[in-house]
Length: 112
Image (cartoon, rainbow, N blue to C red; front, side):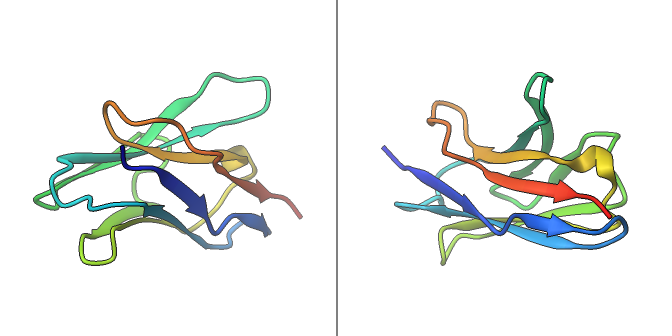
C-alpha cells in the first residue's frame, strides 16, 4: 500500500506562508483524489483541500482564497501552498487518499 509522508511544517508569523509536501512511497498516478486534512489541538480532524487526478481542486471555506493544492504525479508528491496564514490555521496537517492510512502529519504553528 502507498504510504504518505508529510513535511514542510513549522512556525510562521501571521500573514506568512508555508508550503507543505506529501511524498508518496509509490505512484499516485492512479489515485483519483488526494486530500489534505488538519487537526487543531482539542478539535476534530477537518478536511482542508482536495485535488483530483485531472487537476480539479476544492477547498474548505475557511481556507478558500488563501491555500492552493497541487500534485506532481512524476514526483509522487502533493503540495499545499498556504498563504495569509492565521493563528487559527495552527494544526497538524495530514494528507490522505481514500483507503489509505494516516501519516504522522506535519505541525504548522502560526504565532507572533
